[in-house]
Length: 442
Ligand code: SAM
Ligand code: SF4
Ligand code: F3S
Image (cartoon, rainbow, N blue to C red; front, top):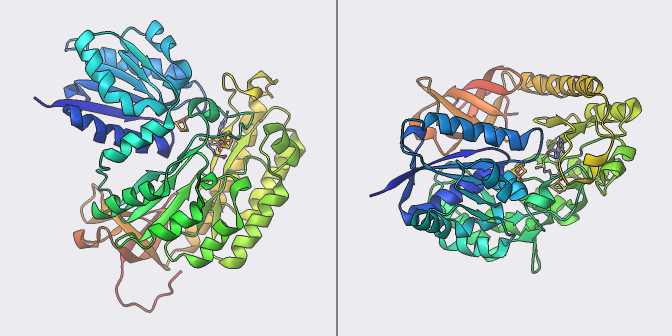
């Protein structure tokens, strides 16, 4: 009899990709996806450790599952992802309701671990780093994603050790998957009906396999029939090589939004963070890309309130934001992570950090709202992804990753449509599909 697995995913796109690959894998031992937790025989929590009270959130979540299953048979409870990697057997000691703990590099072992557990009822921790075996295994399991827009992990781990970041400890050293296997997976995705591929890696532009780099991958994937758009995330300024920059001139399918985390506008803070780049490097990349295509836009990640950040440093970040006019960016207050260098540094006053976050977000959000407003009465290209719950309304994304809601028909799904924007707010554009019109194409 088939069993049901319910997966809840926190964290970055790589966790989302992993959750989907886990679903593809456990099918082999008879577990099928359910969106209804009440009917789950197996509950898997894919966790993130990047900020705040990550660990406590996991125990809280498991507490809720326990309550939910109070009067029912207990499901098999698995904690996966970056908190699982950081905490390993501690989790089994603290929460008897958890049956298996499995780190991100051990997902290829998940079927064996589930079978072992079901046979022996012995609680297990599997948190060794083994990216090569994991991806070798995943290659044999067909990626079943049929979404219009799908992720494809090409690289995992990080050797950069920014002083604030837990990723090198939870995802291990940098590993790049073989070029051919990525292309094969991209072909499978295209055959499944996927139209947009986002290449993923904690340091995606550090991708190196034999003589291949990220630019080679982009140019090869764009030859695959059916693929209309290519994106990649997340990149590091240090790995923004000239061949990748030139790909923006060569490629017809690479989208003109560059997500390039800068974290701070102050060279002093960048050094304290061990970011290994300075603001001048960032501007060089910016100008090179703008020269290739002036409509390229940037988005970024920012951390405010990093230990040692003073008012001048913070103002440098604000100035950078005003100059580059980032869109669709993320901003956070520094959160000390166990085991990192910065966790031992003296925190700055919480109120000051909150105030800086408010200021930075006001600047980022104002700019985003203005940019969206400037698109009203223009026609833009939208990749139509799916129907919304509202009758006749569809959802898609602009070239710059902005969400668009518009009137369309089922036949438009999976196509790039011309959409006239009528209304906008900070995060969304609203409009309707147009045919033959004399309106301006933005
Ligand atoms: N590899 C990417 C890079 O080099 O920028 C970032 C990956 S990390 C998953 C995503 C973002 O989380 C970072 O860019 C940073 O802004 C934020 N972040 C990471 N550690 C943090 C911390 N300790 N406190 C606050 N934000 C953090
Ligand atoms: Fe974390 Fe820095 Fe690596 Fe990005 S480059 S994953 S911020 S250590
Ligand atoms: Fe979180 Fe791990 Fe991703 S810590 S952001 S899930 S790499």
